[in-house]
Image (cartoon, rainbow, N blue to C red; front, side, top):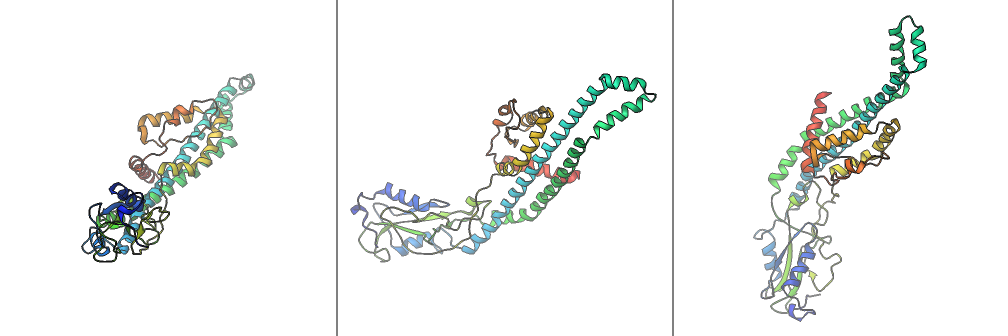
Length: 355
């Protein structure tokens, strides 16, 4: 079906409507390029000459786009490894807090015991008073609960070391790929829709001839795609929405292209929270049971004071009766990787070095 003349359509298609249709066609990863206006138009061959190589402003290189998508995903792998490291670091810090809270609790028990009448009678009868006091303290420090928390802490340290090493290894593998992406993918490419469409025939401007006719003059639209707009992800199969669900008078001219499936966006901080949340919530509940919840809240306040918005806090309501909103509520859940990633990389290197 041929697109009708611009001025004969109802409502009349003027420059603003042309731009709106072009923008809708290119929505997704594309930037709209309107070819023509109320006063002039082009044939199919002329439109393609403007948009496509060898003379046009856009490149058409599916293989290069596939390479760019592969290189771009190298950064996503770094983000994934970073989020995994941060998740484990969060679990480790929580377990560390539980260990400190447990020791505090045991210390309070020891102090209460040595101040009790029972211990006063025992030590008054003892010949080796130092030995009696040492044995009483040692018995409580080696309690089953303390030993269990210490064992858990050692396990989390071991896992943290593995994830720190994995992050550092990922950097070594993927940084060269990112460098290739930045140096070889800095070109504009033609955007393609889910049905392979790349050129939209909006309306006939100069005459009623079909778009394919060399004497025709139509207003058309193509879309520019820059690989940098998908940095960190494999580009979606359809770079633009194209005519999928497009309502109106316009039609697709011609052309088909295929690309790989895309992946969703990744937020490092949110991803790490999602992974660590169940385990950290369980650990924080145990900390609360010890009556030493201030171990966690004090550390969160200190970290937030030191790192500001770069601190990836953990928004849990694990502690009843405490002002958690003041500690966790103001942390930006959508923390940008630009601020968070350098901190995580430095910390992972530190942990690898320490172990």
